[in-house]
Image (cartoon, rainbow, N blue to C red; front, side, top):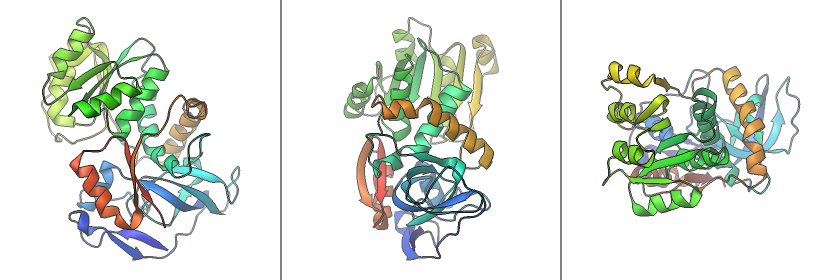
Length: 326
């Protein structure tokens, strides 16, 4: 088969479409013939040499894909060869085939094409696990999403609105904020021109955000704590703004606030399976009913993954960038 390899870390040109051995499904795994994969910020970090796959994972980038089951490994039940699926991966999505633990498979939702289903697993599992399983967003509460026009952001807006929450977003242009509004965002904040702390406080009569989904890390840490409502929950899922920040514990105590920081890739297979099962139970009915949809900016041939990385790094996109296999 062919896959995107990274012979040496570097810029987008470091991504090489090359012939590699076919993966073999092990105990409890299936082999998926990939139709499409999706590009995530973690893939860029891996390309740059900063985010290696966990032990035993595929060496190729790609944390989610869609395709058809080509082979069942030993001990797999409940799936059949030919089933159309999408999958949460520890790596290997930038390839024509990938071996996946069966517990990380999801059926393609009704009304979503097989190609566009590749945009779902990583973002839905990230949002559901952080905003709902950890931070327990409830109807009537306010969620602040940093990077509202990203793949994570566009899904977070839709899921929060589906459960009856109010949604505030930050983005860097009017065009991106307009797209967030179309998805249901209530409070639109241009982070280049406005102070999100002041804007969220103003829109909530001084209360603040009950839950904050943050992709920035250190840069926003202090201001996120300022923005939290009493009993607020800050979920950190990224480090685009740095890895070390100063935390005012007194301010956090005054808010009776909580901070969590999670990632999906390195979790044990059993934890990923539990998140996928929760997503299938709670989110898939929303997708099947057309209440939630993947937002896809563009589709690019997988062999031209370098161009997809350039698109993501330029940050002009809204939603997901997909890689389509030959």
